[in-house]
Length: 288
Image: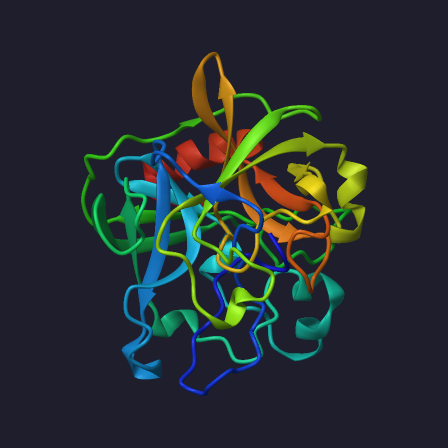
């Protein structure tokens, strides 16, 4: 996931400079099937232009029939002022003019390879952000907690994804899925409709030191030195096959390189490390 992996906001101006907000998968390939839980997080913000209808912004994972989990930076506003220019913040969201979260009506589509049709849709009725989320302030000494739970307006019928019980260790094979950018120069041309996937591997945390990786996060490699997540892939799930079952081990957060996709490893929030919190939110609807 380069920078923050959220999808870049569209604009009516021809050939605008790409706002590096979301990440897409570079070097991946079309997914053959939509594995359980794979979800497109979208929003409507018609006051900002007709292009912001069913606008894919991030990935997510359906962990319960009424809840999806995604990255916190996908559903919160970055801090204003000097902090917004910090190197850490730039890895999450470098869009010079983001649409305020309050102007977005979020919905999801899950169970489909196509982000614009098929599967099942639901409206997001509540956003629960981890109370420790502070846009990376204090990392790597402090945990980042780039995670949020989104409540849906009804219980969907699509299959959910299991949350792994144990954090993925270096050497673990994983697959990442998303509708993010697929070519290094394609931030100007829009996102793919078809779900993409990339085979990757968990590597030593030291490889993600430049991304201020902290406890509770995992680092994934960039195959061939060119492949990885990109704009539009924030919040997208990393799945590892455990006991023959694809299980959620990571939630896409940021890249070790704030400017270019695929050239450095990526940081994922470790889903197993937050498993108890995810269950708590689903049971109570509250962050604490």
